[in-house]
Image (tube, rainbow, N blue to C red; front, side, top):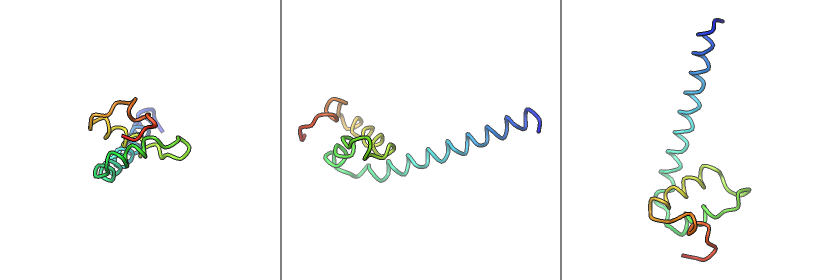
Length: 79
């Protein structure tokens, strides 16, 4: 296998993996978009060992778009 064949193969694998990741995140956004702020805050505040990385990241992103700061998301008090 030549150099360019290897580059092409690796690039194709990277593109495939990236495409799958984007699809997963897009599905997560669709699923969480309709949740209330309270539900999203609960997801965002889950301990790391209980949380699914994409779910927590997307919940925090949606909350930021709704005007929440990182400090508000970390706060233990109910909003």
